[in-house]
Length: 193
Image (cartoon, rainbow, N blue to C red; front, side, top):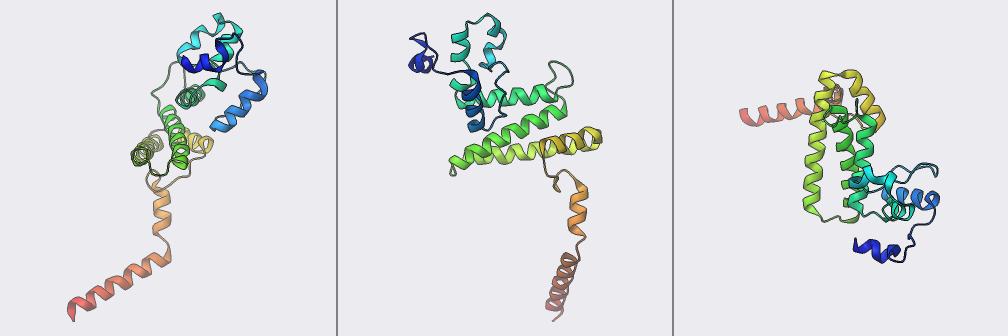
């Protein structure tokens, strides 16, 4: 709450100008999806039910432009959930879980661009990528249509960890088979001689 007072809430004037330009600039700088000027401002997720009862200066003070990075990340995750949920309140279906994992991976990648030596976040990023790979592997086995849609919409490049077709295509190249054969022959010659 201290930051809100420092930013001008105490004087009764919100520090954010009109919704349009500031909201889209902040959204672009945080990596989130830019919002058109006509849409309502996002507010802190925990206060989402009280938006209709808030006065306009308070809405602007609690808007996306005045949020810290953790709150912006939470809004991005909630946007992904609302985009992929099958019914209201659905947070456990695999397309939703993959979308949330993808958003969190992008957030951690942005963090790693700024803080290259943050090894704990690097470890969490690797773990999260493996988690998403397992989720995609299950989604591919259980619901191929949803898998194709998720891969296309989230722009995830298939790899050998969750798509076995990619692994087979890479293995069947002529150069790898020749190299393996040459190495085997060298080993056999060394053992006999």
